[in-house]
Image (cartoon, rainbow, N blue to C red; front, side, top):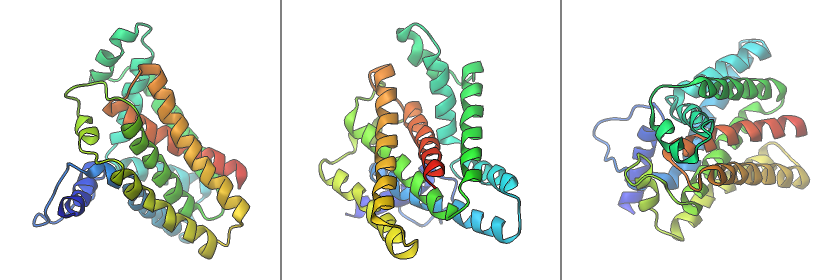
Length: 251
């Protein structure tokens, strides 16, 4: 239990740029189980940012630019880097060379295009969501990271000594799966008691989160026959964009 608690601090340091006091005990071995919780933290910060920008009278376009830019900043660009590396790798026609290309620190044309498209998609979706944006930022960030966790659980890791290898090795199944699902409860409570959403809307939005996150992780698995640290990041980013897009249509 101590290792699990201490890994929460490790997850904050690994997945965000949020500083922590040096006296706190840090453990990185179980950080994967806190992925949806990190989404809740990141989404809450973004939600507060959206509220402040709205209160100050910023236009919807400027709000979307600042929110998406701050989104990248808070996560240290970790997941966006995975998007670009993955895109460069998938652009290679020879499957055997894809992992080598993805390991290259230089970003190619396909990586740049993927990054630009993703950012524009997020900006457009944020602009389109005019009601309860703060909640949907929390919602998409949490479900997208749940999708990464499920990719870690369900699919093989392709690199023996990759940066994300320890995430899979440290899992204690099925306990970690059950523990990770707890993030759904506060989302449902907020939707029903705070936002006064109907059961139908809650079910539809929850299915959007589940299906979008699972399909994204599965798609990358189909392309590479497994996952890497880069595809974990790409799963988060594209799931967030897909969920926000679906929400903007429903809203």
